[in-house]
Length: 534
Image 1 (tube, helix red, strand yellow):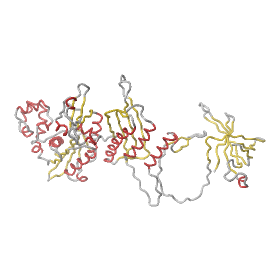
Image 2 (image 1 turned 45 degrees about the horizontal axis):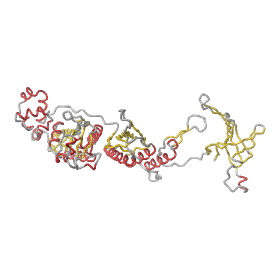
Image 3 (image 1 turned 60 degrees about the horizontal axis):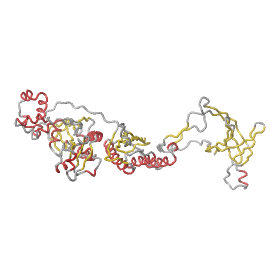
């Protein structure tokens, strides 16, 4: 359930304060939202170790069959058509986070709802929307918007608007659909509800019913002093709530720094295709939640819990994969394709029993293209292409090269390629002469002949060429303190080309020359042709 404060909001001339989203049968809906095929079918949530496994929660369709909470698993299975799922606390936590996202879409002031009795979960949440009527309209429209947004993340909800948080909670739990209670009429509307709407403990409810008190109006009609004498301060709080009064402050939650989805599988999954089906469901939910806040995904962390072959060891075994996106994205199909390519390269070693996805939100990408700029490649399609190439050639062989701060040969590293922003080209003020050298990988073994300490002939790839001009040598050395020291003499030489572009033996091939970089490895005492200048 979710509370929304509507301070200074006018409805029929009266000021309202709070609205409430209530999710009936929350443990069931937490499971059904990730399995749309179960919608409209009788579902029961079971918990407990065998042979004490019992029904923890059921939905409306299951209650119509006769299934009730507290039944054993054997009793439940006697009903035809019932579907059961094991209870998952992590799945309920992520479902409640999705419910809070629905509230944050309206207001930044959101608080947790109270838990029912000894239950570990909450099906309510509270948020302050003072002044939100200027953005979202009347309280009734806000209530309908909350219901619509909750339906997008897979919840069937009841929404109520009232002058206090607890009054809105009671109204949402007691009335289906959308309910708007004008300020001052809380006691009148809540009075028609049963005592269970106040969430009074069962032992106190039994006492009140023995007194002949059946409804909230009957309870509100009792004298205040007698309530305090017999039921204490808790009874006074319930009595005030029956009057529609609530003096508890709203303690708002911080906006989450990450978004998560969790799903426990009924049976271990070994193949990639059914695992991708589960990942697709979770990614779709995450993208819907992020779109509510106009956010995108900057990083995806997938944690797969694997099934252990050795039952004696209790600690879980995980398979973790992290994808850092070069550009923010919130397209579930794009993210699923990236995960597919990554898992094809790094498959889990054992069957998967649990899937958990953690995403880091970032601001959505916004780019204004110019009328006269060329179309750039789509960043998402480019990332998929790079991932496919990476799967073929290796992880460290795809990216953008970056020079390292050293004079060592081949000193560069591969950084992640990020599509640069295309800007309008300006007219060049002047031309700059630049030389580029094409590196041979690996360098070509060679021989160099000297006369009077000057290089005269170059031998390489079965050819012998006279050196027409040269420059050098330039001696460089480094890393003498490490296990991989290096030292070499470098020369730039001009010779007849080693690989002519025209037909060999012709006059043009005899005149074709090229400028090469050669070096001598002083440690190995060998010569190499490193590259050719363009």
